[in-house]
Length: 520
Image (cartoon, rainbow, N blue to C red; front, side, top):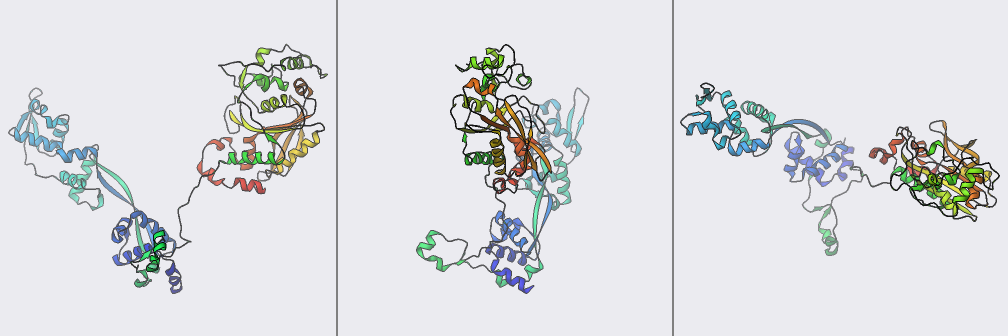
């Protein structure tokens, strides 16, 4: 015990010493407010210091609930003008102890409260209402005390709130009666914190709890310049004292992941490109060799603009794309064998994929090498549920070069995935309308012990590149960012990403470091 006290002595803050001395001198448990008054300090400072003392085992803190009475808005009016029943008695005395209902209704002091005044005066036995329906009169029938318990209570409440447990039986009854009247007296629960010094605190010699008059907690420029700091004693600081958690501003985990993906692409030699959210159906579908009767172009999958509903098609590309759709153009393909509609291609949509951005870029950058990527928002007419959103992000990229091939694409995807902590990856043959050959990127998630489809990838078909005047192979890949985020963050509901749950966001604060280190 003695050794422990000796360890605590140099670590006691001057405010802790004041609180302990006040508790020991009082010889009883004390509330924060009582201690604050005893040492002439702010209650908030006492509350903070009490936590330090509790951490050191010097005090115990008990939280108790106390019922408190407080005067309401109507009660303040009654305190100023008198209770309705008191005003009624005053009027009756002025009128000789007896008055008709018609006379009372004309009294300004009872306006709007005559019925309430009569009810409470009758209940207290002060008055009686006599006569028939046509000629009722009100008469004083008993002695009325000069001050009632209710009036005495209101007078005390006008000076401040009162604990219900401290009220005398007479005032307690009055409190319960007035609390039944709307907004006269209000009862509420007040939580109090009571400090009790422990045996360890009582064992500290009182001289150790003395605080010098010249103790200071910080050095100021003035003290340093004048040299007066030599005249003061510096209060020691306890670096181990508990403090309130600080929640500094942090990036959203999804924003952090986007930055990481962009960093990975830039490190691999790619350039970021941007495109409009509102896109021509020509770039969103037709330039990608997607037929105009494809189900994805229906209203249940795509958002079409009502106004303006159409835009201007790019000059020089309309005829080559039309020929590619109708009979394959000069690619050797048979095309889709239908009548291509220029009006359908000119419709404006909210882009359904960022491939619309990359194909637009490719149409105006036809000479190799081209290495670009996009991470941006797209829109689908989806019913929102645990794995679907109507607005989300897509990761997209293309490479166009003279000798690029499918094996190079596989190696690139493996390298990219390794940079975002996805080590186990495989490929599965697949089909996409505008790439051939095509494959799906499947990654293994160790925490869930399952394989997850991440990206689609492939080489653009000649029906896509030839109408644009591109003569070299184009590697392309893309996928949903939120699906990747769900896998990396271990989420079961995609809506968590946009729920603004601060606890979750704060808990994911280290996501960037973990992803870069490959520990996530």
